[in-house]
Figure (cartoon, rainbow, N blue to C red):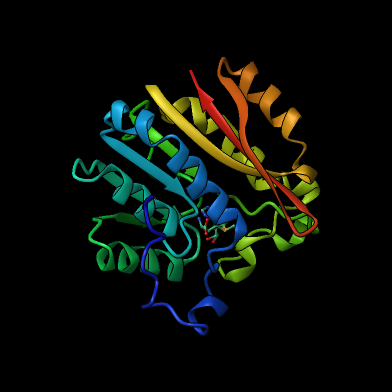
Length: 212
Ligand SMILES: C[S@@+](CC[C@H](N)C(=O)[O-])C[C@H]1O[C@@H](n2cnc3c(N)ncnc32)[C@H](O)[C@@H]1O
């Protein structure tokens, strides 16, 4: 069992500004851990996480893949999340490059079809569309109509980013209409299915696993 990364350098006051790892984060960790063998056999060269928040997910993935650490890069629209991600990596012996940007702006074409593991725990809550676009804590949850607005902006990038052998893990909740998201990804030629799901209070969370 791979332990949850040491996050003791982050305090309650940090979590006023960056997303504190929660049930959704842990569902993503569980999906990665369940695929440990496959991920190790994949021998990834490049792992990308969009919206890394505290850095918990990418750090966990880096620990899972040790001693073969691939190039790990993350993005977050929130500048404080970018700082926290680097710190969390350092604290746990995982080297992470972080870019403060929206989704993958400025990473393409450099990462074109070269990402072997892609993770995204998006802002998925149903909110007014106007709440989207900030760079603070509200960016952690504000997902607009059906909680899908940021997700739908990101989906077309999957075919640009994933390598031939690449795997994409996406967290969704029921309100995001996972079946519809799966259909969109299948329309882009991917195999996509729900690999893990869990009830967190009243929220039903899913991990969609996507491959070519
Ligand atoms: C639900 S939180 C997940 C954080 C972390 N990955 C985790 O699982 O604990 C969503 C993250 O996405 C970031 N985010 C929101 N919109 C974004 C965008 N357009 N581009 C990059 N990151 C974004 C937020 O700042 C936040 O850190």
